[in-house]
Length: 292
Image: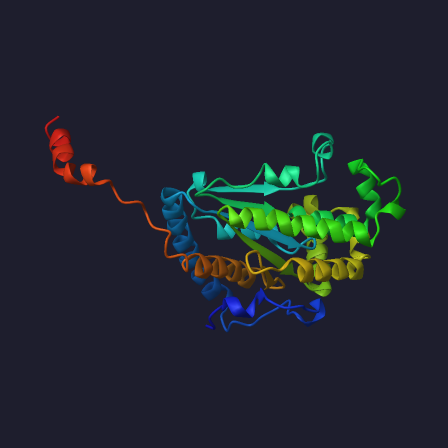
């Protein structure tokens, strides 16, 4: 079984999305891949316990990808062995009326993880430079000053929004949030197969929406927007990772392994030691309890 290396997935220079793989072969069957995932997710769970005690870092996991790219099942499988208090999952849908009364980053900011916790965002603040860029008319619902028609949503508008996102992420990382951005790189053909499975299997029908087919017709536009977003925002402190998503078990293992291998490099993440007075009196505390 091939090792999953951070360097094979981390985006550190300008990319063409068409050059990035949507499938990788790690020389392992499904059972072997799932066994490897079980091992690393247990390690992640233990590491999160230590992070909780340490209390100085939080982890923000951003999952972006086209419909059917496997985000929901990845969250279920990768974070299964976490203490429930240590991970918070948020799925961002169409903005509510309340959310639209605030700036577009507000609803993401208030869902950020506290120190010691993991926050997993299924769809993220990047929806604001992806979906809205493909459908610029959506910006009008934000009721922004100086944006009165789609014509006002020009290149300068997007340049400004990308700068805001980079500043937002720099603020997070400067204050102890470790940011991981995973692009679930699904091929168009694999999406077609997964949409068909939603139609063929009765228990999957509820997942299907006719809107999925409408958005699928805009595939090339979405890919162009993803490519631009990744190239503009993959920074040293908040990098993007390409996750080949055509095979779900391998994609889950890749995300888990990248998280663990990166986080274990933070050697300062240790459980805090007891103060000297408590250490010196441990035998007395034990004695008190044993004598009850």
